Image (cartoon, rainbow, N blue to C red; front, side, top):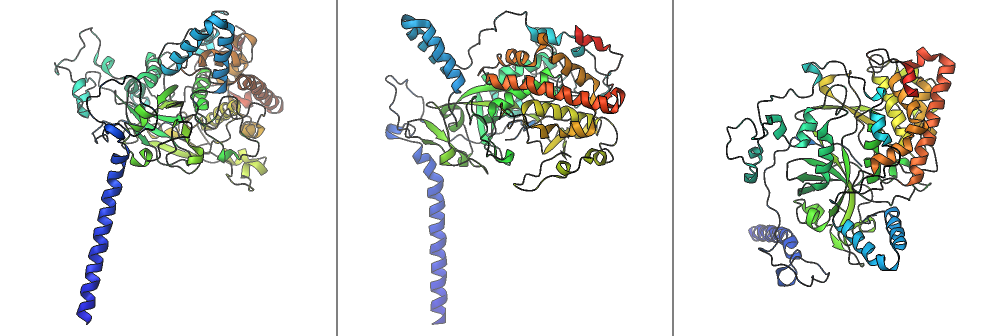
Length: 554
């Protein structure tokens, strides 16, 4: 009797094992079956086009392939095709065109929406390009200290050409693999893709130089390069996608969740606010206008959710969240801590979605970065307050703690404070630096998606580090004074700079006006510090040579 029970138990265990194996196989095959509709087409309830071109082969799940990944993410964390501001502008253009021109205006709008890579018209030539004049100002032309080998993130052998064969892509192969110079006479470094030129240009003092042509080319790559692979990025609270391009570059994609006009609801805590794609774009341009150059390049792009995300992803968890909405739009929601559900799905019109693409920094295996806790980090609690919120002398304690007791780190924090206040960004809990440069280097301004949430409110608590420490770089102070002048007005410079982006307008006009208002608040705070402690104790001279302060009157 005992042996019979043992045998029955073994048979039961075997049957459970077989059932489990069968279920795993069915679950694995389900995405393949779901992706095929009638007549072998990919599953989609939308009607087929009138004259569909013949397809060479039925779609299949992308095969895994080896990529030469030399990068890591550059940032962390409602989808309409565009914001209401863009649509309102288009409707106004149609009304201005009149009856006969309405159809042409509508056709032009359709072309703009379908072809995001089309060149944008240049800004009107009214006032002789104030942005170009700003970058010619003496305050934007002071040279860096001479760079030694230890000041460069990478020491590049200029005789070695970029060889994409490492990624086993035959279309990139050069027939003459012994050639060290291009037929045009360019050097080997000229053969590098723009993302790699960006990486090798990083040094102790900046992410990129003021007039590095590779940066503008990289911005163009972000909106035009073919997307070959997509995966969800782990970590963080909201959905982000890692996109890999045909030239092996990578970028972090943040999809649109709010229109330009929407403000953060007043009952939202800062740590549960949406991350805005246009805030990432605007932060890059603001950082460059302030001459910090500490935000990796970011550009806006219209992405086809079907062709450029669903059909190229190898992330099955992401693929399974795609669905078709009752309005016949393609939607997905991915996996994350906040806002990743059917109720918060990201939907296109019908399958195009707007988002920001931030270029990756070098991979951590090649250039390690150190993560620091921001001394003025918020409590991230509904009721508790951080120490700096209750102790007015908190800065004195910070200045006695490494690395803030020497070097320029406390001044870097003040730069970041001004940057965040102008954007209204309360979510600066950590920051990063390149480990190679030790404590004598700049702070990388990553993760700016929670900026530009409120244009009707100035969050003065962001300025607490400046008010408590009363320290600022002379170069930063003079540039802020310059940007407060009418001929170099910050809002106008930002508007001109943002017009270059493919999904412009990036910011709602009240956000631009709010920056001018906040700039005056910053200057008033510095002025109060100078009146209290004296100019020399507040303004730190960081110029290599003597700079006459009258340059701000140019």
